[in-house]
View 1 (cartoon, one colour):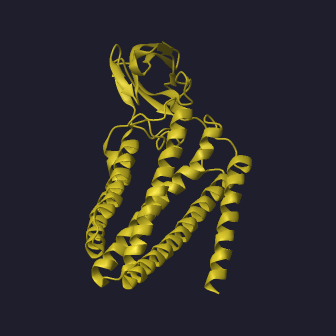
View 2 (tube, helix red, strand yellow):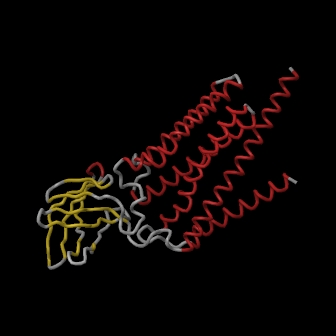
Length: 321
């Protein structure tokens, strides 16, 4: 009966995720300003969520092992850590693809990219630790302790560290209409950074209620320079012209102007509406989270069961010897 339910569950998860994939490419509308690149968020964000869930489950079972000393708890702790590592790698790869499409580079050591890379190294060290210790009981105990300490870093690396560093390369702020990035305030002739682009405010020109900024944008490594001219309406307090960064699908916005000091607040943002404001996109996104969560629990049970069988076979072989 349990085996039949497992087969049915596996089939349902497969059908569910297949439906999410079809919806992601054929049903979900393009995100204005990002086009098809926005679709990858349907996979990227859920896999990142599941990696946090998996490492949490691993820590819980590690605590159970230290408390009860049952081998099955260690099996589940290891299975959850392996699944978490897999989903973290998926989140990293999908993020790199998005970065290439939007920013023109797969890896730029953005704080979030750096923190997730460190997280991968921490859990890779867990697997190295397990493979380096021959004594089973000692391996399980040390692994459980390490897993608990490793989990302490998960909330910091996923939620805290990326927000402590100034970064506009990760799309958290640019996906929201009316960018939530802090931007940079420059006086005429001054230099600043938006992401990995160097910008220089060369001048402000006023025609009636409209102020236009002349901004020189330098590519990373000074591979080229471009002139952009965002504009701002003094009466309405709204941005008017928002030119795109060369080779990117994000825009340069002029958010505030102070003519008395000849300074301006410049920011980077994505045009259009929020990615999840469309109901079809929102439902597909939620279905993706549910599907990947179900996939994790299926992988968790499968891998833990296989580890249990492997241990039982090893015990049987040891008894024969």
